Image (cartoon, rainbow, N blue to C red; front, side, top):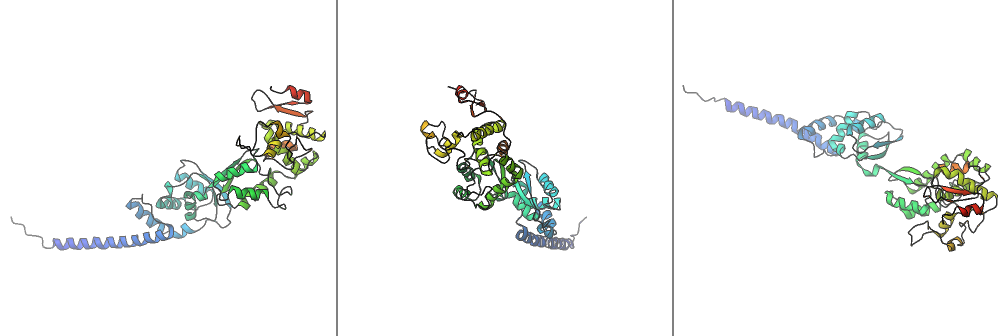
Amino acid sequence: MIRRPLRGKPLILLILAAVIVLLMIAVILPFQKNESRLAVLIGSASEDLSWLQRIRLIFILSRQLDELSQPVGSAGNTSIITVDEGESVISVAQEMLDGGFIRDKELFLNYLVYRGIDKKILPGKYAMQDNLSILEVGDHLMDPAYRLISLTLLPGLRLEEIADLIEQSGLRFSSEAFLIAAKDYPAELHPAGGTSLEGYLLAGVYEFKRSISLESFLNGFVNHFQRIVDEDMVEAFRRNGITLKQAVTMASMIGREAMSPEEYPMIASVFYNRLRAGMRFESDPTVQYAVGWDENQKTWWKNPLELSDLSVYSEYNTYMIAGFPKGPISNSSIEILRGVANPDQTPFFYFRAKCDGSPYHNFAVTYEEHLQNDCN
C-alpha cells in the first residue's frame, strides 16, 4: 500500500513551534525584566545559582520587594549577635528571627541564597539594630566593617601598651591619636577631675564597632569606669582615708606587683600600713614607670632594676618621694579596686616574691624578716 504524505503536518508543527516561541517570549521577557529590576534594587543574583534556582528566587523576591526593604522596627535598639565558625545559615536566620531583626525567616533565607550571602557570612560578633531591613541585615553579615572588634586589656598595662594593642586591632584611629587624647582628656568628664586616663581604662574584654570614633571610644571607657566604681566603692575608699585618684593609683601599683588575684587585698593592706606609718611605698613598678622605655630590653617595665634606677628623681618614683606618686602608673581591674576598697587587716609592711616560682609573695612585719625572705 502506498502511503500518502500528510500535507497538514508541517503546518501543525509550525504552529506548535510558534506557540512555543510565543510562550518562551511571554516567560523570558518578564523574567529578564524582573531580573534587571532586582539587580538594581537588591543586587545581582549569585553566579552559583542554577537557571531554575534563579527563576524561582526572582519570581519570589520580585513579589516581596516591600518586605525586603522595610525595617522590622524603628526604635534603633542594638543587640549583639554572635555567628559561630561553621554555623549553618538556617541557624543564623533563626537567631535573627528570635532577636527580632527579621519578620520572615524564609524570605530572609531566599534573599541570602539569591545574593550568595549564605556562603559569605563571616563568623564573629555583630551589633545589630532593630531598624534594619532584610537587605541591610544580609549586607552586614558579609561585610567585615560591621563585625565588632574585640580588645582585651589585662591589668598592669600603661597607656603606651594599650596604644600598641589599638594599632593592631583594626580600629580606625591611630595609636598616636589615642595617646594624645588619652593624656589630655577633658577634666570635666574625668572620673577624678584629672586630664590623663592612665589607670582609668579598666581591664576586661571589650567589643567595638570598627567605625567607632576616638571620642566615643574613650567616653565609653570612662562611662564604664563610673558605672563600675560606684558611690559605695568611693565611700569605702574614703573610710580608708584615701581619695578616688589615690585609690586608682594604689590599684595601679597592685596591678603591677600582684600576680595572683587572691593577694590583691593583702598587698593593699601593706600599702595602707606603710602609708599610715609615714613610710614610703618603695614600689618597684613606680620606678619602672619613671624610667620608661628600656631600649635594651624592649619593654616599658625594665627588670631587673639597677641601683641607680632607684635614685632617679621623678614624681612617680616612690623610693624618692613620700606618699602617693603623681598619678596611676597602669590600668587596673574592678577586682583590684575591690581589694583597695576592702583590704585585709594585717600587720605586714613588706612583701617580696616567693622563691619557688609560684605567683605568690612572702609577707613580713619587720625589715629583718623581709631580708630573710630574699632568694639569694
